[in-house]
Figure (cartoon, one colour):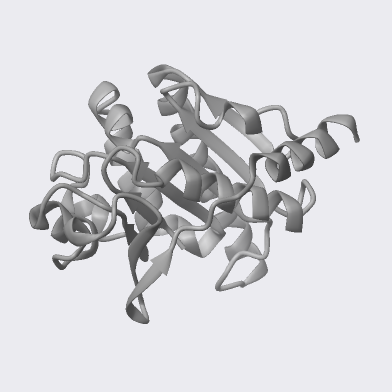
Length: 213
């Protein structure tokens, strides 16, 4: 699945991503799940970079574009192996491309957009997925060609009904409390969700486990 998380500053995007990553690292050892981090703010995802689950980390626009190019190559390699094995879906370990602040990436590195669109259109079949967060849910950041590939969209508190529609297709996110709540859209429809808060001590514990192990 490709997931979009969007909302205004302080609405809980980083909290939700941190919870997802903590749970994933708790449940799966390295090798069974892999992560690529694009962290142009250089503060939100850096704590996960030293862990063995991380296969690439980008903190500059140039590195980010390079990594996305490498992902399109990996995607094609996996398709080639699927064809050779006559498979309809890849059995290889999932790779998640985690992007903190999609708007910074697409503004600073326009070459990233066609790569993201290509990955979005094709990569789910080969077990490569995008998790992207942004506080700028506008048409420049979320072009139609990119947005249509997200199979799960989580809208947090945003500034207007226009932004809410850009995130989840309907108004409503502008009426959410400042933080802690969201509206999720996926193939099952819409539902209200609580944004879980993972204690930093739990995150620190799992990071320490892999760093010392």
